[in-house]
Length: 347
Image 1: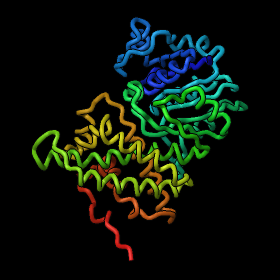
Image 2: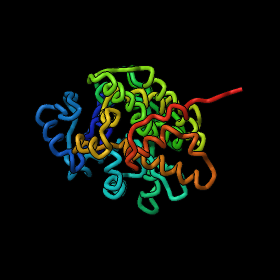
Image 3: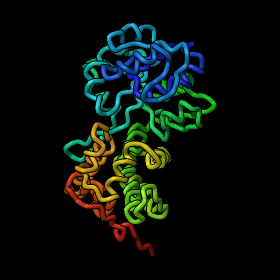
Image 4: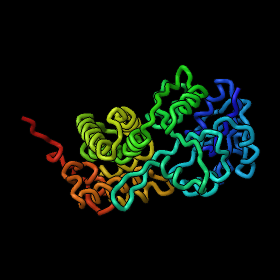
């Protein structure tokens, strides 16, 4: 039996306690400063108030002030902060983590630099760890919703990091007959692929709102338009992967994650509202209080592409869906899918 400490009690981190506990490990779940109510509820009856699932009896729960105790003797640490808590995790958690214990993060995202370079979060963690510290940094990517993982629906993800032996060790602790894990040392490819899907999921779900607007009926669906936008999204994601030096095989994780995101969650809501005809500000007001990583990733990705275009490295004409999404959320444009720009002629 190993000891696995989960730092942050968000939905995905908490869902991974299911395979961890069922593999016979001691599981410790630590709440962030924003998770106090979650931890209090779990201590009462093991019910997770945002995941809306009952966790296994026997998991040990900690508030953030008890982090040191929860880390004592750990063999693996999982970090579950959202991208909005990135600075907190870097400033408050990385300095206290033991170097010898691998860290696996569920945080999906990337940062754009001044020159248009896109940097995945694991590399940001590496850059922001205390000087002289060398943490074993790894991350998860792929199509996996927290509630379906908790319900034991078959899921296929990728663990990525710099050292294959470390990845094999982590997989040995967490893999089950329903949690299937590929391994890759292509951190840029895996993490950027699954981050980019947020931007393109917003683009695909514009078609949902457009269908509802056209038919005058909430819930109206037209799959042709969604499929066309999905295909264009995958095409642009593949181009971006090539641009940043990620392996093309990692499109399986990005495209799969795109599929999952299109069918539910906050990104689908914002895309649908925009497609119905709401302005970006109106849509955000209707979703007040909801954090939208898709907006952050779409903005960063489009900004990077625009910078690269200024340097002559790419053409904006190769990214019509991304540019339209950016125009909608950052430049006040109305939804008007640039269908003609998607078509090609090959001789």
